Amino acid sequence: GGEGGGTPGPRVIVFCVYKKEAKDVARLMGARGFRCAALHGDLSQRARGAALASFRRGEAEVLVATDVAARGLDVPSVAHVVNLSVGLSIDAYVHRVGRCGRAGRAGVAYTFVTEGDAPLAPALVQLLERSRQHVPRDLAEMARAHGAAEARAKEAAARAATAVGSDDDDEELEARRENRERQKVAQRSRLERERAQQRSRGGRRAGDFEARGGTKNSGGVRRRA
Image (tube, rainbow, N blue to C red):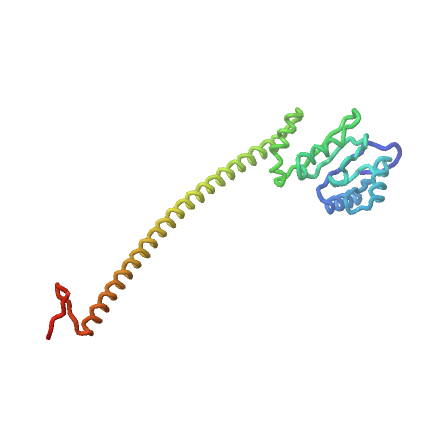
């Protein structure tokens, strides 16, 4: 609990992602006896300044803050950082844990990791390994599982893209065949119409000649009756 006064003890920052989350956490901790100050985007600049001043003086032992509101925050005596989640990015996580153990002082960061943080697990493991920090077994397993799932998803997407490409090729070939068939049918129809027109013109010429009472012989001379 946060009872008592006197010399300010080590301070704690609790990081949240969302403003509502920060409000709820500060309210719940206050109800349990912690001296809390809240820092989030719904506060006026004056209210933010008052919250920070209270935290720096030790009147508030816990500062509940969102990532955006705490950007650039520098309080040397912060001994602990508590992350209620990894955050929205590894950069946000790095900024959070950098708020404790400043000016040569020791500091410890605690992070609650849930299934919702799985997409960031591989990068978090790499960061901890580069920093020579302990990697919890559950976190390492989460990172491996997410990496394997991501690899399977990429493989499935690649297969789907290949299948779509193959279907597109088949459809294009089929369209070309259908187009050639239509052209052949149109050409046959055109030839048949031309032949029919020629037969029709020939029949009309013969009928006209006979109607005039004339016939042709090989010499082209009309016979007398």
